[in-house]
Image (cartoon, rainbow, N blue to C red; front, side):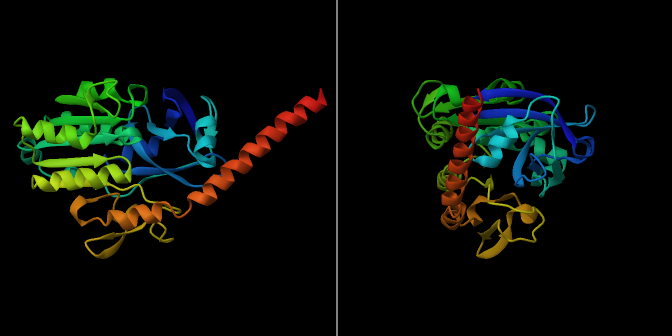
Amino acid sequence: MFEIIEKNVLAEGIFETKVYAPRIARSAKPGQFIIVRADKHGERVPLTIADYDAEQGSVTMVTQALGVSTRKIVAKEVGEAFADVAGPLGRPSDFVSEPIEELRGKRFVFIGGGVGTAPVYPQVKWLAERGVKVDVIIGAKTKDMLIYTEKMERVAGNLYIATDDGSEGFHGLVTSLLEKLIGEGREYDCCVAIGPMIMMKFVTLTAKKYALPCVVSLNALMVDGTGMCGACRVTIAGKTKFTCVDGPEFNAYDVDFDEAMRRQGMYRTQEQRALAIAREHAEGHKCNIGLDK
C-alpha cells in the first residue's frame, strides 16, 4: 500500500498528492510517469511524475478530477493509501543522457499548459540544478487555474505567464507569447511543450515557423503501461509507436496530432456514462440516508 503523506488543492478540481513510494523516488527521472490505482477495483490511471524526493522516499503527482477514476484518486486523504503505484515508467527526457557541458551551452524554453505545467517542473528543476538556462511559459484559461507558478519561479531563469482572458500576465495563448519572446530577440535551442494535445499541436506549428527543435510529452490513453495492450499507440514519423514504452516524449515534428486527438476522444462517451452512473449512485446513497432518518 502507498500511503498519502501530503495533499494540497492547487486550483478548482486540481490536486497535488505526495505519496510514500521510496523505490520509485530513488529511480525516477524527469519525463517519466506512474500508473495509480485508487483501490483494488480501480482503473489504472497514468499520471506524470510532478516531483520526487529520494531522501524522503516520496513521489508527487498532480491530478485533475475529470472522470470516475481521477475523482477516486483525489478523494483520498492524508493517511489513506492507494492500492498500487507502479513506476517509474516510460523513457526519461533525452536531455538526461546528454553531457552536462553541452546542456549548459543550450537555451531551453518549456511550455506548460494547464495541468501539463506540473510535469514541466521536475524537468526544469533538474536542468536548473545543473546550471542550465531555462525559460518557462505557463498557460491557463484564467488566473485561478494557474498552478506551480511559485515553484517554477524558484527554478526557472525567466517565468512568463499567459492567460486566455488576460487576468494574469500576457493576454493570449502560449503560442502568441512564444512568438512575442522570439520577436523580442529571445533565442532558443529547444522547446519542450506539455499540456493538452491541441496546445502541443499548435506549439509545434509555431516552433516550426522558426525552425526551433520541439519535443512534446503525449498523454495518450493507456491501460497496462508496458506496451502489451496497444491502447496508447501513436503514429510517429509514419510508424506505430507506444507512448508508454517509446515515450512519452517524442520529436514534435514527427507526431500525427490529428490521429492522436481522434484516439483520445474514442472513450469519451463511455467515461461520461460512467461518471453519470457514479453520480446517480452517490445521489441515491444520499436519499437512502435521508430515508433512514
